[in-house]
Image (cartoon, rainbow, N blue to C red; front, side, top):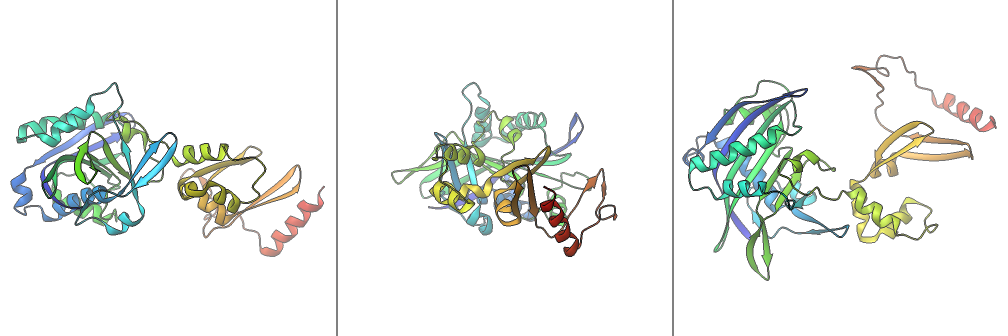
Length: 345
């Protein structure tokens, strides 16, 4: 169902973190009049684009160890269409022993500026206790989503990092900073409360959070500051499904994908770890499938060939490959090396 979006209030916060010292540097409240009058057009567009994108994203539900992905019940104009084609959001519910979501609800339902700022101030303090980036912007927004006679009074929380420069609270300067760093239209993390659902054709809300992160693995701290249940990861879901497969029935990754059936798409979000003796490595399933080759020379001798466009070996801030300390073998030298390894036994 198509819905209209309106931002009512925004609380802008700049935070810094140096080791264990965390500070709220600046805060700025933007009221409804300033948003609607076009005082901050680029910033208003940034907020709208992000919250509309999250509202439009598919929703991932983890139930009994399985994942179900369903379409969003609403569509708001102005979202990032590219993200909406492939990204998804997690649905998180509050833990039983917390009432922190009540304050987020207060921010969504606040009828006065003072009520909203009071709620936003406390949410900011909770966020300050988490592990955020060294330079971080936090945007707490009160907005409404309307679809026919249905109205959702909502709260959106967005956060992103600043790589360089000075943190500010001028909304238009913030937008230019993020554009300069090529953050793009969509910030790193965001959530919307409450969740909008459709029950038998009727729109309503549920006390749950719809969460987006620009990463395949959810950041635990982004759930912890509101005391939310951490979602099951793709590794957990796929690992559980794999453990139930009959042993000895697969001889390739293609067999694995076929056996996993409808859960095979989750492999794209899986990070695999391994080791050769005491040498450890990690890779996404996609990279392992496309760029790794494994060979067994003998029961006690194994090789892994990794293909890639660029190689780095870091020693502190230095790259030993770039500095010429590590030399590449020519193809002929590599072939000779393989012959020596194969003949060593």
